Image (cartoon, one colour):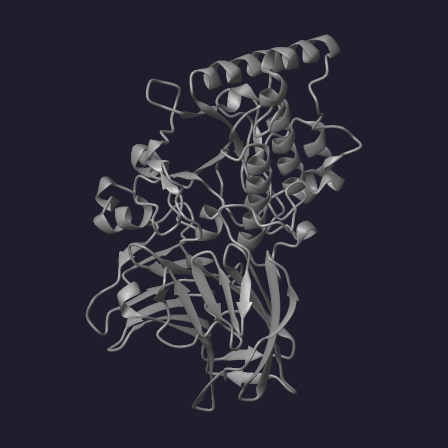
Length: 510
């Protein structure tokens, strides 16, 4: 129970005013957030369920993963088999095509929230060693290390993911701002239909109720033409195949080469009972989930009020009117005027290849400025701790996440920038959201995470979001006036992003 509900807002306000202390200091040079480990726990929070193992099958809420080799050999979502056959790595050398063999995975760490496993396979002249894990939200992450006695010149190296035709109805992939619209495509019904795409860190294929996400954070070491046609979807006579084309003709594998991939079946959690009764927006009649904006905090995406006394009163007034109040933050940007950011600017920065912030603005809506920060840095520790303290002190009901990302980063100080290539830190961003979910629900079981997800339906993020808002690109065509128009609001786009069924999160169109 949060502090407001425990002893009442009037008493809290009296204590705060009399002492002049508002509970926490985000700029404290002792940096309590470093050791707090806010949101880090091995407990599985509702509505997720503990992992269970039976033989080689790992079960989480609504899904099963059969781990009989380097990759899942079957994935079930909502009692429907997703795969038409095992996921396999494919190698072509000297005109001969070889696929990885299936085999029993060996389980290591086994907890309710996380299971770790390892497997080995032979791929022609290459030995493939794998270490992986699956967590309670159904994310499977595998790291492959390729071993060979001498460099191998290959004609092809890739991954084949065969999906059952009846669940392969739509596809969606990541596309950075600018250029053409994010792809929300209907998969053709006739054999021979093909879709090709340059490298992207994220692609999802599914139907109206379920799907499968594939994630890779960097294209370093992929095809020599910088990942062109790296993703391919084809409808065959029997099924739909997602081909991940890692290396083409002229590719070379040296001992110790590593690749990391992720899979996640969707939906990742149930939509809560009564979610149709949640109406999110600005304070007005009929709205019962509302937000405090940028101007209400001291700096941009800084979880501390600009005017604590006034803020506390406003939150209580809105809650007395039956509204749940969430505070605007960002998981990708923060102000640059405060002491903690200045101490950690270099390490926190989400940077270009030239070591500059990917975005830097002197002011946002006429007040404090913002700079890009990466969820793979210790900024995540600071932000989650700050949100936890804000909920405890001011009794807010959660957060609204703007500019969520993940965007690209090349900052090697916190592990991004794979061999000079851009990293899209999907796993780190997921971990940050998982921690926010944990602290928000611990402070208030009915707490809310509402996120602005315009242009991307990313299951790793949507897992830990209650309400998501797409559609701003249509309201503000100047963002991308040459590429985005109302013509892009297609039935396929709406089927993927506007129902929430494939994700387990509530959609609210902007």
